[in-house]
Length: 599
Figure (cartoon, rainbow, N blue to C red):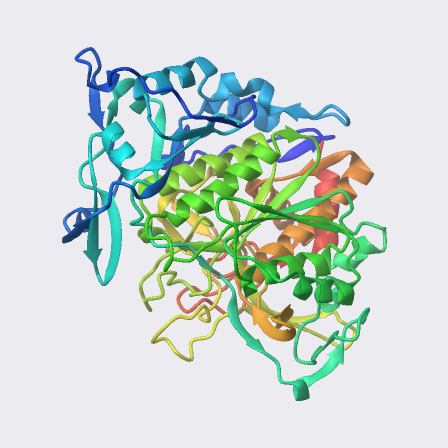
């Protein structure tokens, strides 16, 4: 399933992931950075080699759009080659048991799963890249190449041009890159040779400051600035409504659990410290810069950190961050930067020993991405879940059923749509005077459908890219909209009227950006309790469907079924639905069902 038998594995249901089948490799040598010696000749021009075109997957409208210029030869470019993986080895890793004090070191299995050291040497020899820096990741699935445009033009026998389409400018190779067939047979994606895919956006919604006159309620102040609007749902109220505080009463507050964040912006340490003081956070916060460090703080990263701090107040948080400024980096594919962070998380967690989760609050509509981006990202997502036994929580988007922001244009958000992700939608939660859950409905707002500014509500719908995994057979999954493709979200949590401390003041905050880290904190508490009680931890999207199926045949309610509201197209129903997924946390019941069924 999804279980470590301490940390062990029980029954599993493995997804067959359409176009991402066979995308993941693991390798056991540390990251290597190499500036190879140029080959005396250009062997890729040798008659003995068969050259093939590698299709980058840009749509015809992009390739046929007007060319408005040529990329200068001295332009610096960052390109990543993603290699195929051995799915049978990943399947074995997914079920492999981990004993206390005896972690799985994935580095030791690198040459079984990824390209071998010998193959890597052959690739360097054949390409003979001059004036370039090569870096093969720890698990040998991603090869970073940093060089000038002229170098890539020589290697791939092409050149790079500017296109203009629908008011935006992007660069791309003028022709398909040509590479030796033996190399082409090993790879699933080359990213960074274009920046056609629209940059990922954050899924934070309706951030606005609160006037001082409205701040009338306090939540357990540990510092002077802990007073917020009484209409907001405080972290203590969320914890009580969802049962997180019952774990606190057992001393399970996230100690030893790690939440990894993917952020394309920075945060102000003063803001998060004020929040930490208010909730009594006693865990650890670490930042890791990937590629270009961010130079400015934003609300998204701050919200993510604060949601976990308020609900798992002794957890470890690791923020992987880089800069995302579409106006300043013309020759950057921002999805490549996004995926570089996933690669770094994979590298840093290649020694599997304790449970860890990932929380992602960035994405974009599926139709805006090239197949190369999806294939490259999917490789790392599969590694994180199957090889490193993590759950990757991803915000489902804030434009309702219309993720591209066009009303009545049905789209779902990527990477939440990837079957290796656990997509999290949003709700509106009301509590009574005792803090108990009084009412919960799907979050949506159809008052202005002319433009989505992350306010339309909980994202959900049918993927255009991925088949529906076999393990999702629960009540509500087969419906009038089913096509055989993946349906999302998987879960949901409160995404409305949450206090966040940003820019030196309290904000009225929300969005599925809040819902994803709320679930990340919840599963961290569950795993801490399971290790203490049963010597196991659980992980993976299939976990939630297995537990929901058990709950549907018993009196237990491991998830709170949301049956009211909708996301401007799909309505909430009994069982799974496109607006709220399987439901919101009932963490004590969820824990009990898992504990009673793990082996």
